[in-house]
Image 1 (spheres, one colour):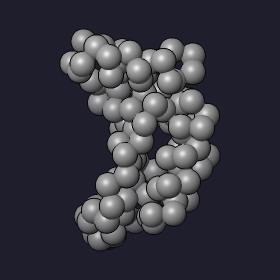
Image 2: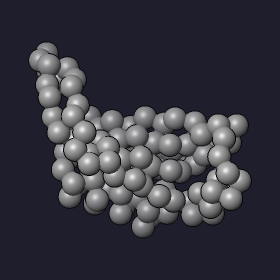
Image 3: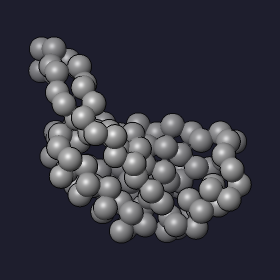
Length: 107
């Protein structure tokens, strides 16, 4: 088990995804953010089933930084209720995991 996590969020456009990703890395809240283009999301919102094209962000960070990442996503996001889910990274190459920790401020 490590202290590194993968945070998932989605954005409604490529521009918004890039803006959020850049801000997280610039603020040293994430070591890296991958943007997976144009996924299709199906969800219930306001009592109706919705479908949207979205961009998935895979945010590599630390458990210690999660609250700051969550707050930044809320600040930067256009959605009323942006997705923000953290998944523990149990294993990884020691060098890559160390790099994540080195890049995230306060870790």
